[in-house]
Image (tube, rainbow, N blue to C red; front, side, top):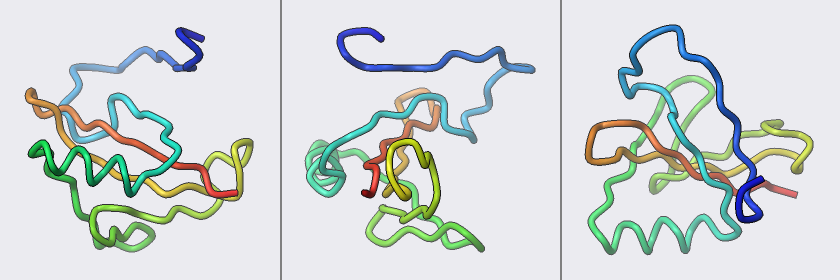
Length: 92
């Protein structure tokens, strides 16, 4: 824990290409966070693939992180270097 926030570090098998989530944040209100970041010019990723669909940049993921709830609502965006960042709100 750092400042009340938990995080995990893992060893990579190679150079990160930015196509997978490099860092994710847990948020209390994902709609508000997405709106705030969009107002500052952040562009959110959109997905429409089997098992993952975003609506207005936010996906509903059932069963993800069951220790936090019954699933999560999640959104992804890229930093200035192209790394994928994410945020999630556990659904209870």
